[in-house]
Amino acid sequence: MEDHTKIRLEKIEKISELGIECYPYEFDVRDNLSDIKKSYADFTREDLEERKIEVKTAGRIISIRKMGKSAFIHFFDGEEKLQIYIRKDKVDEKVFALFKLLDIADIIGVSGTLFKTQSAELTILISDLTFLSKSLHPLPEKWHGLQDKELRFRQRYLDLIVNESSRKIVKIRSEIIQNIRMFFYEKNYVEVETPMMHSLPGGAAAKPFVTHHNSLNIDLFLRIAPELYLKRLLVGGMSRVFEINRNFRNEGISIMHNPEFTMLEFYELYKDFNYYMSLTEELITMLNEKILGCNEIEFQDKKISMSIPFKRAKYMELISEKSGVPVEDLWDEKKLLKFIEGKFNEDDIPPTFGKMLDLMFDHYVEKHLVEPTFVTYYPKAISPLSKESRLDKRETERFELFIAGMEIANGFSELNDPVEQRKRFESQVKDREKGDDEAQVVDNDFLRALEHGMAPAAGEGIGIDRLVMLYTGAENIKEVILFPTLRPKE
RNA sequence: GGGCCGUUAGCUCAGUUGGCAGAGCACCGCCCUUUUAAGGCGGGUGUCACUGGUUCGAGCCCAGUACGGCUCACCA
Image 1: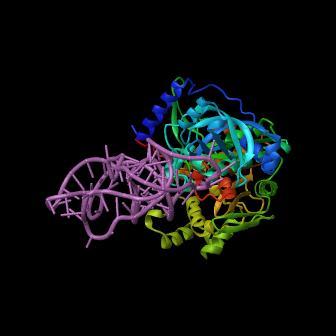
Image 2: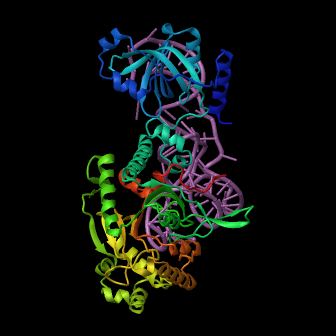
Image 3: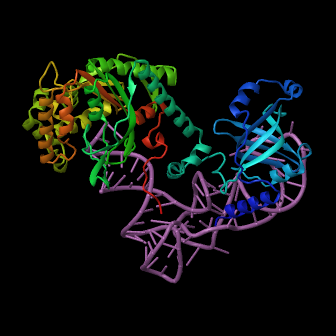
């Protein structure tokens, strides 16, 4: 056993011997530290002297400065720090004996009177001390905090205790989600929850996790997207729905990817993708206002203007512009393949036309999309759930929003023709046969729903984790997910 | 999955040419009633990630393994 732990266990014994409960059941916190600071930080020493303001609060000890018969302690309630002062002549003997057995990281409750020290720091002069919980381990180092990323992710609680930047990310994430909910509630959207376990993986191009249900004796897939269920709700006449929930994709882990991630999806009947581009601008503008108070974000040393309207550019034209390949040649699978064969390794040559376009886009375009940009009119081959474009039969009414080189949103006019949808699924199956293991499968149950008639509709998904990265400047998705997926240790 | 890098005390980090394992904070003992990176005196608390190898001798060199970071690929 670690020495620190042994010593602290001995202290628990000694506290017990004083007749003090080491793990009590409750404590009446009358004032939290932020309220105390907010209310009294501006009072002068004389004001506080005169008014003798009593407070009762609790928190975790983060530093102790002992001076024989007195001591200063900083403690922390998850939100704010405050100093407390204990003097031997101002408390019971037992309280002072308890104080001597306290360690950094222990959790205590205190009652006392507010005053200001000679250096004008608001401080509680303790009259009573309640032991609330012992920590058997010391805190990480006091001014470097916890730096080791692996420890920060594995022991997030320590990270939260000592690193304010980590607490701030949690808070901003909560504010973003809360504001998104408000945004949709105010527009009369209904929040729903659809299955996390699907009998067919659908709604996106991705490899699923597989699990098994014992009593049904069937394999189930953790969902890769909620899309096909949300559209069943549109068939059911729910005209405005949204869901904020986890998706699971059995793919690589990187600074942009976690196997489980949070997705917002929303759908509205009688609207098209143009309307949703505007709605997205409205949503992002609202978030900028609420979270940052301005229409600019700072991301990895880059200032990015978020003012609307966002740029719009066609998918094929962007590829053409950055790669130098004429648009009509991009549409010609043979010419495109020839170009790719000349540029990429043999191993990297994609098996399908859609994958070739993806490769071109990712390689030539994506990283350049720093300013918010709607990439529009994705080809049909890579958009099996989107409605055909009114302008060009090869394209769909689909857009993706890119900010800071990250794909943030993906929306489209929803394909609602069941015959066409079946063809698209079948074309996906052909892609799968050619070696695209992320191509979708035919979902007959979903097709039956479409056959009952789905009104025209727009739909969109927004990756919440990446959105939080934008608003917090986090450079790794693990920073915005409290417990990112890591290989277990030991 | 590929490439590069890292892993030394509870934490943050040094460790030279292969020659007794180090510092600061934390911790332990003593002193100290307005300190705040409190201070003073004394104390090193360690499976140098793991397993082998080379060597008189390995934290250091070599091989492998584990975990992580960065990056490329796939993906949102």
